[in-house]
Length: 309
Image (cartoon, rainbow, N blue to C red):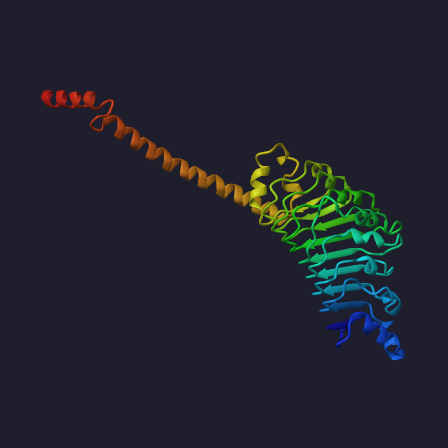
């Protein structure tokens, strides 16, 4: 197990709670912990949540990274740290819900949430509602931005409708990144209620076949549809195509969209020419081959021409 204070790494055979208890009794360690702003907890295989006294030991920490902690399942004590602005969880396979965000204090300064390789999922009994509601009401006097990144979560099949509660946030910009969720197939229409949503990243989410029509009423939104040709093809065949035209794509996605459309058109045109030529040859063979409908007529004309000649 390792705990990283800033740029220094310390190995220990203790659990996280025992380590903090040991450090809190060392005056020199306490003084050093007071200067820590970035805290990374990696490889604590029995840690289910952060200790409650963590903010007292590290009063100035603003960024916490929880990495490879397979039993970590609750964010309640982490988000309770008032000065925290960035929280990242990576490869925490027991973290299945964001409902524990409900512990966020109203004066929280949290701006960035990042989850990669976790087991996040939406169920009938758990749609992350309390967490989304708490996230929306935090930072009432703080404009800034709110960024939520959920990537590489194979268990995530849909985004919860409770994400629409972010419409109540006072943040100037809401950024949602959903890159690499290969089983994500559904986006709720409530997503279009988040009027401050400026970026929606859907790169490499192959099972999404359509976007909620409510996104069309959002001004200035940028949607990244890289590596999602199935969705782009479907959009060209729906009434929502105008609503989700190039102005709503990123520049890269716009170039890919028109390149793909042009290539598909010429490929289809070439196939059509080939098929028409083949159909013409088959029609002639059927008409004038022995036994064909016009075989006898064409034979008589040929023999008459020979006699006249």
